[in-house]
Image (cartoon, rainbow, N blue to C red; front, side, top):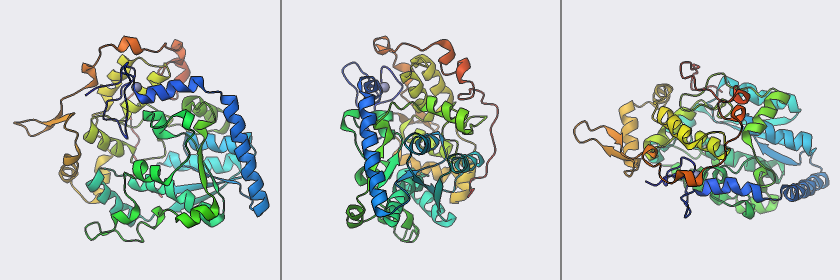
Length: 420
Ligand SMILES: [Zn+2]
């Protein structure tokens, strides 16, 4: 297995990653390419788009001029801040409630409504449907949160059609940031294809309906995308703000904490060291553990990679964190096994055919799965790809970032899995 010479991603990183002749990955190159963009030019383009849709809403007599899909996290706060405070838009906020909420996440969602004076529509999926879908998608593709991705990528467009609000504002293009799936030059917009192929693992809701799953058309109703006819009638369009401004999640989180009381976790999830992300999502540790069981890497790889790309951490420090976190079995797993009505052995049996055999091998005598390939073994030529580090106080665990990262693994918050 090849690993990026700069960050920590392996060549099997999802959805797809490319290495150049220097052995540096497409995600690292995407990150670098931000330095070459004329951001004031981009901001002008954004202002033009927003003015166009503001005018359209006025002509249609619609009080709302855009939709912002929100979860309640740092990006949601920042998107709403930009649209409402900086650009004077009148957004309608839309949330797909996946039901695996944390108390802090619910508090933060309310915080957005309160602090920014915006309206919110929240769709809550029923627990029984979520149970059936989680169970079936773990068994089929090893994803316990398929309904999240499907819900948040679909429900805003259902609202777009019903309320006649064509413009949908996303924050960061996640797959561009992680693996450099698209280029900043392309200024891609949201497509139904990306939604299905990458967010929903190639599955449209009707693909889930069968006798084995017990899933019905009613269970998947929240995930059915509007028809081509509805799309063209509404003229819907989804733009990513990260194409129009230099997106720096940590700096934005700091600003939202300071100015709008965005709530941070006090102790981290079990599988990473970041306190300002994934605070609304109780199932994230299990979701991420599945990624590790399949591909051999997890959220600590993602988070340390972000830190390395920003010059806040060395590759060696990142590798150390990966070895501390990526293999951790989350204590929340049992509550989700109970929720799905399966044993841990069944869970592991379902995942077994999805394990990447370039990473995993079954020990001959113990029959246990062991990792046979590791980034620790790949330390050649990394000096050629190194970035300069920022000042000590601005580094990941430096004094300026104390509330945002934490390595203390002794404390964890107890949650119950289903919180509406
Ligand atoms: Zn990289």
